[in-house]
Length: 352
Image (cartoon, rainbow, N blue to C red):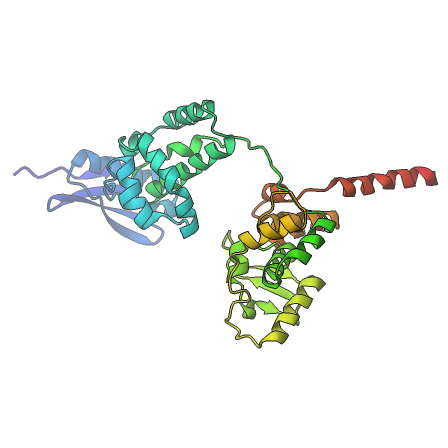
């Protein structure tokens, strides 16, 4: 058998056949290096040797250390990847998010499922979203579909199932910021009177701390530091630890609860947060017709804090909002506060 001719790339990389596979040697500041080119084809070996030579000329030693020519994993169709790879292995969504995305993923697989994973293009994604938009799908809902596609293809690229992320170049739609109903101070006090004791405590916890439903449910007594006057929210939605200072009202409530029974440090502060029916009944008795849920009190917390002069920077940290844009969705300055601020101009004019 004729011996294959060795490869020499500008004196920087020397390739040679070892058995049936190509290998190479080259020099870095660390000395002589040997590397398997992971191919039996000489032309492909030459291309890979040139890639190494280019990195050496640029002195990109980090890039050189991360070279990997392993064959691409077989993904099959879009639907097969989602079903067999993404959901069971590579998806980082929480269980709650998974459940919320089930219907959305079914629709995406119905549209793109038969295509090869690498056969979905940015143009096809844009066209489908435009079609759904023309059918009445809101920009916010379009963004949720696009976010799911971005997550799927990010995982596919990261773990070697495809080389391109077609969703990456598709931009999110601008969403209309909708502020939910919040109670004014008088309405809130009327509601508290009508709520049973257990529900009243949960509502106060949400309204005085801005904590999310899941955060209230997971709160343990060991997370309550009465000396420092703060709660430690260890498992937040964006997976970041944060501290929530106690208001006088929530401090008094927690102290009263500790007097009733000496809790174990790992015991939950609240046994459950299922107050939907009790809250609806209390709203009706209080004569409040606004659409209010437990999450509404997180909006109320942000609104009250902004009106009290808490800076957006500090409020974002206390409430665990990921960005100022997200905080904007929650905080709403009420008309009464706006009139009070404008009254300052009248006071200044009177002085002049």
